Image (tube, rainbow, N blue to C red; front, side, top):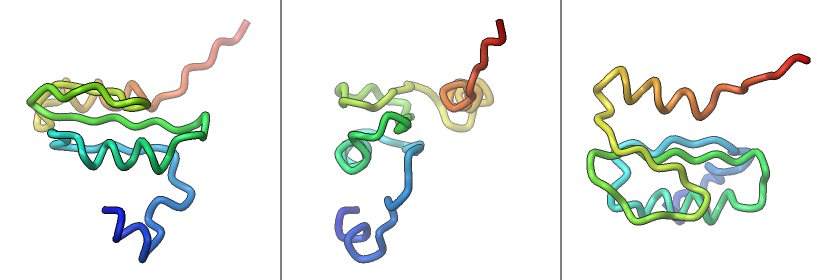
Length: 84
């Protein structure tokens, strides 16, 4: 992943990412390091298996073929506005 990014700059301008079938977490770890420092960064990692905690990564233990898992992923990216 690091070599691909070095060659093609795939992370340039990226602030949001979903890592599907993420265990054991190495790609999420790379994303966390490459995207750190931006307050808008959001990384969601999804897998059936539990993973070790990673800084800056929201982890969902779930089945990516289930609607409920997709809805849980989406809720992390939906902006909520409070009008008062």
